[in-house]
Image (cartoon, rainbow, N blue to C red; front, side, top):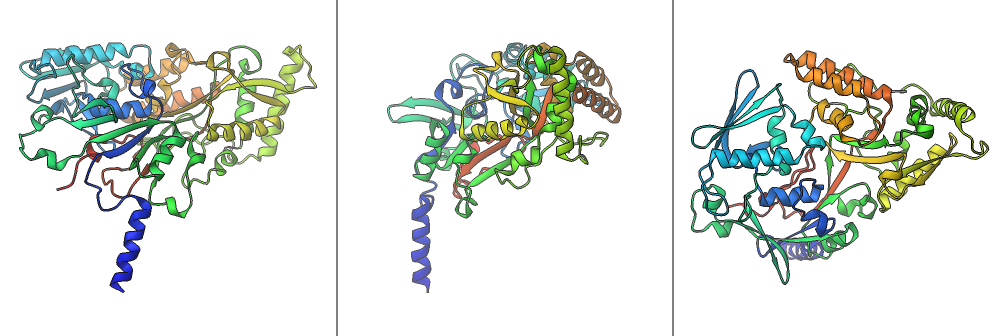
Length: 493
């Protein structure tokens, strides 16, 4: 009996290519994407690019495997009672070029990072930062114009890393060699840790594989990679979702935006009533049903339901209305607009162009959405890019769990499509409110106005998936779909 069990165990380990030597050799990690976007030096980062940036460059704070804020270049911090001042004490150490890590140099690096994000939604989130001051020794202070409860979460974003000449400021260095791309730990002293002569026994190097989704999955199946990171709905149909995958497929239950942003200010979708008609005609549950993902919930709200502090003032739209009645109303609105303004052939469907990537999951989504909108007299065509589109797919994970993140994604200053200046004004007004309950009500009012403007058609939350061998302990699904590599490369002692 014992021999039979051992034989079965050996066969199982061989089949999964995941047993026995989990702490030996490099940890293979496949990031879905291409080298130009994943290894970029810019400040506009994809999810896999954020993963690499966080491993090689550090900010004042960072995110751990559960998505919680933990120390990085700052060893501790305090927040004043009024929430208008965050004071950080930097750890002792040097920059990669050997110069001392000081408050002045850290301040300059942080200001440079913040300035570089101007014109982005993350830059909009950072707007309450009024001043960054270098104080005595290794202490810097961030002064805010209004309280921002999620400032630490923002500072932990990889784009806010404090970069310096001479190398990486993070815990790992990236090295290219003839046989691949590797991430290797720096010695403990360079990571702000006590010296340890045996430190290399507790870590592994990471061999990075950057490839399209199908190739990354094949590397996982072949045992070349023990982790695959960066999966979206577009690549989800490529994944084996049967019983054998239950231990390796990991889904992140995220907050964020998954829907359609109205891009065009002209034509059919220039009319708010028609835009609302398109929104009411979509059967969100049916769109998401085909992927058979438990817990993936559709929504008609631009702000994810269930955020911390949600006052519960807003409900889902059209909950009790039959989809047939909603589509009849949508069809009537489109017909009325076309009879008044459309000079084309009214016996043919109106054409609406949508921009979305080419991938198996997005192709299925496009097909199903096209079939639904055909019922209200719309023909959905694929646009060459966002500039020529009427609708643009939005698939974006939230940086922090606050209505402000969602509302800032549609700020008029970003010029991403149709927007509502009165919503921007309400958000700004809410920021000045120190009473959390009153601020939450004002944000709910801003969400209600954004909903009525119908500049965004919500569908659900973004889907993010990874593949992870059972031998990799330091991987935890979290709402930000953020999975730091250094923790995965540490060997438990």
